[in-house]
Amino acid sequence: MADSLNPHFPYNFDDILAGSSDPATLRDAYQHLLKQHKRQTRQLNRLVKMADANAAKLATSNAALEQLCDNLSRFVPQPVYHRLLEGRAQNLQAAKRAKLTLFFSDIVEFTALTEQLEPEQLASLMNAYFTEMTKICHRWGGTLDQFIGDALVIFFGDPDSKGSTEDACAATLMGLEMQQRLTALRTEWAASGIRMPMHVRIGISTGFCTVGNIGSQNRLHYTALGNVVNEAARIQALCPPDGVLLSEDTYQLICQRISCQPYIATTLQGRQRKVQLYHPHDNADTTQTSDLIVGNENGFKLYLDATNVTDRDRITRLLTSALDAIQITDHTQTKAPDG
Image (cartoon, helix red, strand yellow):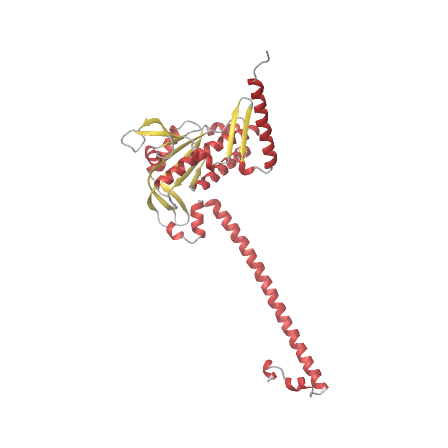
């Protein structure tokens, strides 16, 4: 009966509950229960301490894992990083043939810029430049291949692709947005005392490449190899400062979506005939995805980065006051003279 509730209890529960046990037996039973309670309390406390210790170890492990992931995201292209986290790394193992759109940018007269700036200034400037360009790259879904000195190499089409046309359009619009962003950055850098402005050339080319993990057994780099990569660099060298220049293959993919103007016909290394290069133009697609508004005219200078605005009410009041001032001035100048 009640004895089955605790097989290790050496007393009869029924007698105790019925009140038929003598005081000495009740006292001994109480002492036995008290010892059991203390022993179980100690065991419970040990379990709580073990749970707390395991929770602390888990928190430390999670923090280390988060730090590892953060560091990994800094050294691995974002599309590759996401595939690694999602457990889809098997698709990244072997190099393969794929149609890519390659982006190559380079800073004009970078050597002269390095001669004007102290090493610390140069490092800060380049970090700011690459940070801003990387943000734009990620927004458009590009795979950041590498920084080569002051050059930036990005490709579209692997490991994720939306089709050759969409990839080429994304690369082109990304380049246009980068040039727009650089216009604003030059204003910021000039205000901070950097006298020599930074100007960038951008070349974009489309074609088949070898892409994937390439390197040694101990160190791999997810990159693209092939003539298209070199072609993008050669097109960049022909591009005027602050411009974007496209190969004919890229132009054929985007011409129905993005306005372009012929720039020059030339023979590129690896080609048997001359190819026409093209300048893309800003259109609604770029302004819709950009949070920057930049303008500079006589009596007027505007730099607005909507993503970094903190006091929107004050900005709205300033813009409203500026519009009122322009309208008052316009009304005064156009008002017919009396008499």
